[in-house]
Image 1 (cartoon, helix red, strand yellow):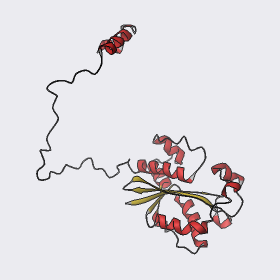
Image 2 (image 1 turned 120 degrees about the vertical axis):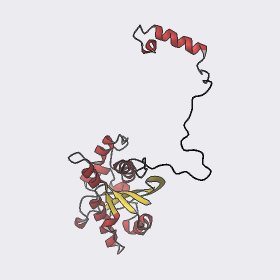
Image 3 (image 1 turned 180 degrees about the vertical axis):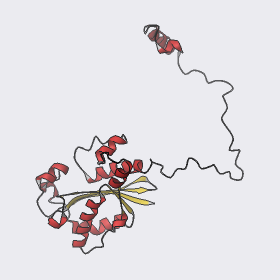
Image 4 (image 1 turned 30 degrees about the horizontal axis):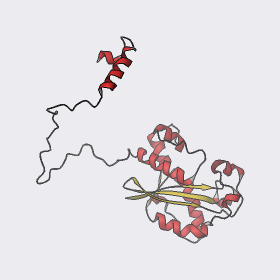
Length: 228
């Protein structure tokens, strides 16, 4: 099963008021595992960058001036995502912008049913708790220290980890209750390992053992090694 974890950065909140996409980042998953294949594109929005948006993602007019316009990359973007399920945090925002850009190019719209909203999943799983990407990283102990500013590709990579935790970890379909299936010629599934008849020799040298004993002797009678 192919899935695309996706994020965008924009100039604002409303494409109908003139806001545009300035960055798209996407990560490909196969069977809930990252394949290493990504899509990343900065985009010239053909307008100035409001300061409020610049403070969020740090993408300014000078940086974006020589980047391609959406009309130059829209078809390649659609070819990359295909009909795969799109994993997006607050999917309504990104799909609204993507479909506005695609409409202006007379390209096919992305069906709303193609998107899976991780924000909605998080709110359902943890009602009343913060459900931002940063909050979910803290909940699942996912390292996001490199996320000083929003960035579409970095956020997609982080969201991919969050998504796998939201659906039950890196092996969401792994059935622990499934009984092993015996095949013809297999040995008994009831086999269990037995103790070694002769213990393995210690890998600690005499000098190391002496140094450890000297160290422990200085710790007093309460040292944990003296109770073993």
